[in-house]
Image (tube, rainbow, N blue to C red; front, side, top):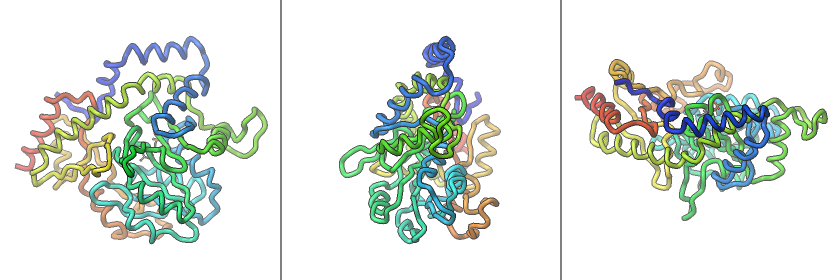
Length: 371
Ligand SMILES: *Cc1c(COP(=O)(O)O)cnc(C)c1O
């Protein structure tokens, strides 16, 4: 019995007729770029995130890139993020003309360590990009006031955290809806995944939303009149239709992911070899990944592979040690918590359709490994 890290086939079986009829509707209309399904999805995702405007775009990477483009960075302008994230977070900063400045992560949550944020701010800092890694929100109640005091924009990398919530002062705030902008990814492996690439920016700022809309269509609100130089980063109608068909299930899927995570963590609690992930008490985690710290991680991963169980290392090399960022001047040892995490994290199957007996198999293979 093979247990993949993610089983999109199993998900498709549960929603087949709804998604196929949504695709057929687009086929019948033959209108493929932006249009009604995209506007509807933009409204729905903005609402879900507790904010006002959604701007669909071509990928999560572009959601971050466009969010940074509207800051009009000048050479040398700095954007602070963590080195323990998917490459796109820092890649977008460089492509927007900025310079990534890294701050280490909190060892419990894998999110930006706020205690180190303030000392990383310089006169060139323009924005902070917290990453809500694996599906739990960073300490926004501390990040937002620091940013406000220092006049910095906040670009939430919410690619892994759509629908995640955090209790801030007794109110539930939602991933993506707290910063100046928030970026989502609809890459197939994300909690709300399309049949290809896709992304969205959300914001409460109407003017910003307007500018982002222009930027995704070559900088022009009207055809052939370009206020500025933008790019082609539109969301396809067919992706939006698929995502709209999936959206009503998102909350239930997140709850199923949490239930799987909870079942794993009960078992791993007292085991020496694996340390289960920590959910900050203020967070409602959506577990895009269930990521443990594992002793002899690579050997455990090999064992899981031998037994037909999918797992993955997110992420094996922190961004400050990537060859393309050598000129930023960071060396090994600079961000020990991120470097340590890169050595011992392992993500296990946590997808909503994972059956209890499959979960038990994963648990027993791991327990047997450490025995
Ligand atoms: C997936 C992801 C992105 C990029 O999204 P794409 O849609 O793949 O471009 C950015 N940041 C994080 C943290 C991600 O997980």
